[in-house]
Image (cartoon, rainbow, N blue to C red; front, side):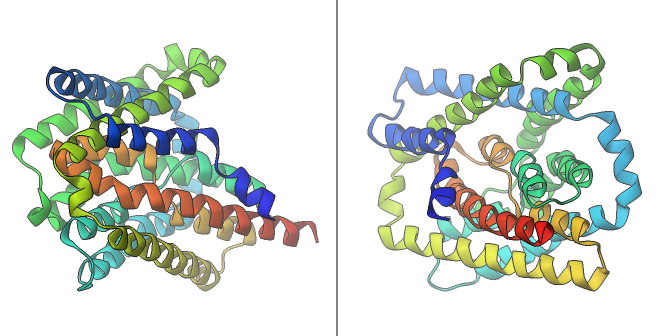
Length: 319
């Protein structure tokens, strides 16, 4: 069991932590700040272009057949999670920046890769997981900024310039990538390994730029070790509540075990790949690092917890 848990700490997670350490001790300053900011913007555009190119039309069409399941996943992702985030924001011992990060975490779409991977390990309905996770990410491009504007007005909100940036850096590249899928879909499928490096490299670039700006702005003076411990504990509680809620909802809806697994794994995830670039677009540079901390902690916790749960489901199915 311990070996399985340790295997979750994949190289990318270690690289992510290393990027945070690098940004802490060697943040970009002066002219380098603008250079890394421009590079991060380019990375965001490329990231969402690739997301659009990876989304197949078949996944969209097939999703209609499981509309009850997909609506349940979307309800948990964009209704239950935000309600829990608002509740956490009222806790008196949670600082303002940490509360903003926790709320932003709850407004994000579901992750794609790990949702599908854990569904496959648990012997769930993989096709439905592909559809649910894809729908969540597609809607998240519009729904997440809208929720940020509605629920986080006191934490930055969204200006007209931000809306224009969202359209140009997120929506347009995503739509362009999807429309070009008939032409580049084969290339994307053949070069998954190379494009994965580009995908993750873009995330690391945005994280370095965001955390560097936050460190220069006094990030570690605003957040104490106690704040980090509180955030970690709240992320754990948040995930536990949603896992219990999705399990109960699956039973209430009378879903087959294969579909209930999809609801639990797709409904309980939050996407680091979408959250990092979205935060870079939605929030001021000095605030992005603080906002991303809860997401990075939650991402690791969800991987460990869902790995254990997926093995448990797999054992039940085999039995």
